[in-house]
Image (cartoon, rainbow, N blue to C red; front, side):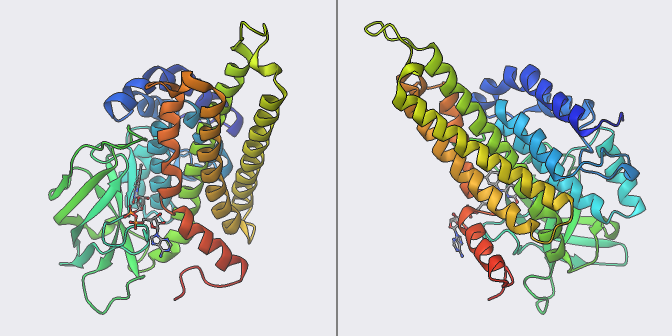
Amino acid sequence: MQRLDNQRLIKKAKEIATSVLAKNVDQVDKEAIWPQEGIQTLQKEGFGGLVIPQAYGGQGQGLLTLAKVCEALGEECASTAICYGMHCVGSSVISVNATEEQQDKFITPICNGQHITSLSLSESGSGAHFYLPQSTLEQIDEDQYLLNGTKAFVTNGGQADSYVVSVVAAESESQVDQFSCVVVPSDTDGISWGEKWDGLGMRGNSSRIMELKNVMIPRNNLLGKEGDQIWYIFNVVTPYFLIAMAGTFLGVASSALEVAKKHLTRRYHTHTGSSLAQANVLQHRLGTLWAMLERTRQLTYHAATSFDHGEPDAMVALMAAKVEVADCVVNLVNEVMTLTGGISYRNGSKLDRSLRDARAAHLMSPTTEILRVWIGRAVLGLALLAD
Ligand SMILES: Cc1cc2nc3c(=O)[nH]c(=O)nc-3n(C[C@H](O)[C@H](O)[C@H](O)COP(=O)(O)OP(=O)(O)OC[C@H]3O[C@@H](n4cnc5c(N)ncnc54)[C@H](O)[C@@H]3O)c2cc1C
């Protein structure tokens, strides 16, 4: 796969967004269909291994590029951006400690644009506490594990080629936070899928229930060591997760601001003969929204860069970025709905979709409530998960 620098990747992501995602977004939203053409185009253009190290054949990009790529995609289709973002989170988890066999089976096809992965962490039992799986992993012989459990809201559900699944040891004495992650190929016997995803927004996500019933996988599909996955959660899953979502929802906010700009410039009242752009109060409101978006964008870029440079307080900035983006996108889209009047309040308007997509920002894990607490704990020097 051709290796591209970050500027070319971001430029290409924008081109794919405007040429492919924009064309399909209405159908993806209306019919709640998984955005196949967009994802396949990204794979074909070298985005499959975006965050996989170059030594493994990937593009070797960090969180800043991931943020900007997801932002570019999110401007046109939030569903595609999250489906792609979850693939990147999953692929970073697989690649961080990949064995040679895992490189051959998963990483190489991901980098070659032939394999989509995703993340199966959430469960109905632990809800927003996505780091506490209850699905079980049992070693049945030297070479195989048995998996049982039910995962909820698996993005790319039924569409990906593999899933990164979190599990606890079946033995009762294992500690609840000492879980493992395994990679499960989609064609493994014992996997079944719940109903088609019919969300309020993010309707192309295919966020489905995944049943794992006596699913047998090779021991070689264990990622890292048994029970050390809390490390994965805070060092890999959470940073990539936070930035994939922050980037996506920045894109949604950014496109809403464009809707406002266009409306204010193009909307003329006959009784005044002037555009709405000439009204001081509307200029003031638009300027306030621009500043809200820009400061949130800069926080996100700063957080991603801090992580890429290995700075010690990067995690606090990443958590803050995701919550601030969630506040920003919900408030900004809501405000633009008012600024653009009745035209945006129609079914099928761009803001109709943006408003519904934006609402997922607070409730997708790590959720706003949980992140605000973690940020406070981190600032106080307390462990995020203690007590
Ligand atoms: C579109 C979409 C895509 C998703 N994709 C994925 C995916 O790819 N992989 C995956 O694993 N999961 C995914 N999820 C799941 C998601 O990330 C959340 O884990 C899940 O929506 C939250 O679980 P719940 O609905 O059971 O919330 P609940 O646990 O019922 O929580 C409800 C609310 O209470 C708050 N809350 C709960 N406990 C506390 C507490 N102790 N203190 C303060 N507040 C608390 C939560 O923050 C939340 O706002 C997705 C969800 C959506 C909507």
